[in-house]
Image (cartoon, rainbow, N blue to C red; front, side):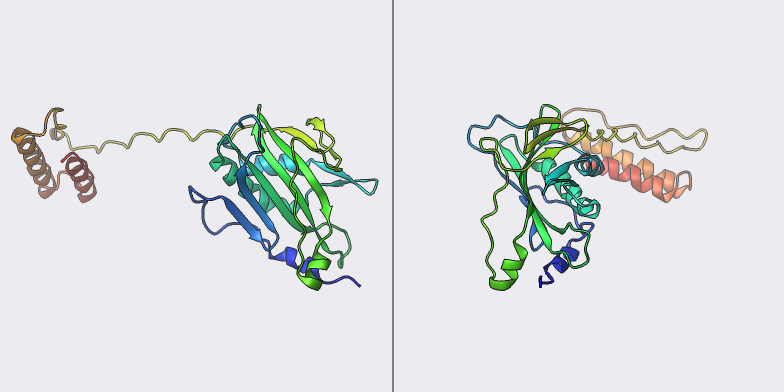
Length: 258
């Protein structure tokens, strides 16, 4: 009778509580599910990292990948599995350097039966030539029963450019570089638009705006100008010609130049 190891799959969170840190190298989603930044294999060409890819685009691309397992073509990833993995991969790719790959271990209950155990998936990923390269070593690694019995873990292997594994992958629109290696076309995340300039406060008719400080060395004359600007601004506020919020915004801008 199989153990209840599949229950560990339920521990995988579907979202992160906090954003990635600049120096982060590991995203641990559950006891045996993680994404890591690691040095690329020796002799590998530089990757197109950092890569700005949307989590949803990654999930969509990976959801199309199938693997041949026991003569059956099955989805490589479970749909719910990709909810957490895609965000971790997006964050890791955004921080990865040209000389780094990502390695992935994802342990999930992939069968259709309620009592089916969790099995592992090991992969290496990197971006190059406008595609997400996916190299699979194990599509269905059955290790949880032994781990639950004697706490022994296998030496996980994550796929290699130099040596093919026995995995067989397919995906519509992908380039099949090798049986275990797909190049998945994927679009970069749109760049954030530059923020619009803050609207200028509208002053009452007849009231002139406080002039900006002239550029130049910050000598005594410079500071005298700033003092006069602050006095004029305070006068406008005291006469209720500008609001308190407008006063504070303009005052902060002046003080920032000091």
